[in-house]
Length: 365
Image (cartoon, rainbow, N blue to C red):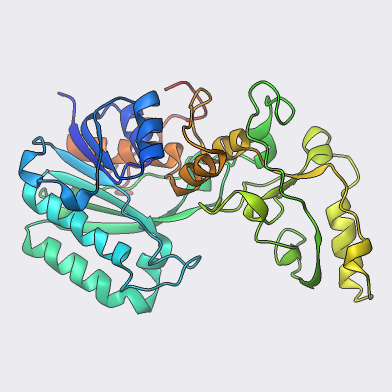
């Protein structure tokens, strides 16, 4: 079978593109408006990315393709934002749709936050989106996938919408990989912060909250000041936000990272807080082995290849990582689309056989 030729939209630093490239898809053209992300893309993937607002692109000049994929901005739909469907960025899912209408690919894949798929408040947006695709002659299916089910050491739910001009039953979604990668496993092999392959130290101080919000788990709630929550090293990380940098950067315990049997300061502090005793937050010193994750560690937890280089300031690097589709998740989705092109599906489950989805870690691109 000849290579599937694709256009990548809202490409960012290239997280989704890595997955599709690994699946054997040829990317003819890509686009993003963020200059730092475009430089990262060029440095690692190729110079076929056009750094310009998609609103200023003449769609007729885009190359013909078999597939269009991309993740339009999600801030308007995200539970981490204002959840405003009238946010101008929310309308970019329809710009994606306009480009599909202009180029008429055989398949398209659109990624966005789970809230767009799940919440009743966005039901009219979904209805408008799906109705127009139907009028365009596309059959569509969507699912919410958690990246931790697909070889990514991070829990990150995403809506995946797939459309095709083939019959509806040709649209497939990947099976779970059957393997869970913990944050601890993901971060093994990295040097100490600021040394060798572990660059991008976040120096934001960690202080305990005067009025903590407590949950059953010490890794939930708000125990520290700022939005940076601690990571449970024995599980996949929580979702990494694009707002990382400063006190919004997640926290890990360096001692526990190196020695799983070390004393757990966080659990001890959480247990103390549950007792409801009064304390002076200014007098509490958080030990130095609790620290923010580095840029290199964030990239690991997002599933980027080991040799990936991010451009721009440190805050921009964090932002590019947090805005990306995890490459391993993108790979599994891409493989399911490739098999949909080929018609190689499991007739019993209606899903792509697991044998087609080898484990993806941080191999070089």
